[in-house]
Image (cartoon, rainbow, N blue to C red; front, side, top):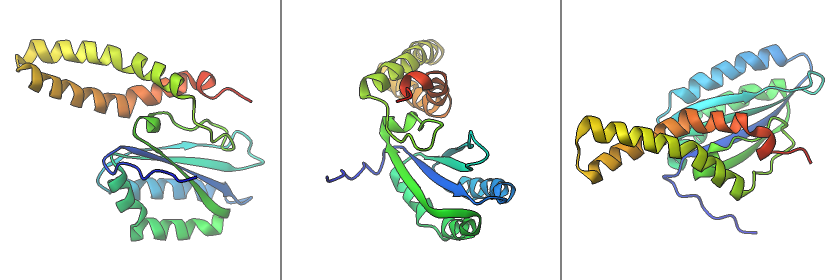
Length: 188
């Protein structure tokens, strides 16, 4: 199967699964702070979430990094800072890191808490929740921009879309994904 090349301007979320060696959890937790600080120094960094293991006996972590575009993510991924951090993590983890990328709107929906469940939700569910998240933002922010600025329609729409995209990407869609996690990712 051929995987299509992502649009370099689409936002991207990358889930990295790491299995931590016994007795190394505290060191790995400190390493997470280091990797977050390193990634935050790169253009386009949009945040990092960590899904901690539900079972301490099997310390498997999922690190979710978000970048504003695939091109900016690639700059981070190919950087010496990232390579050095990954090299440092090898002593505290087992096996190779497993990477899974989500591009565009799919990146709004974070992977489920269980690291072994890597399937994406059905597109109809992503569509429904995208409408639920965006419609109120568009109505409210559009009304505020129109009322407060008096800009021409095209420019007012551009301002509205810019604000809605930022608010949805950083706050609303991650929140919606958490709230509807069981519906998006039902146990099989």
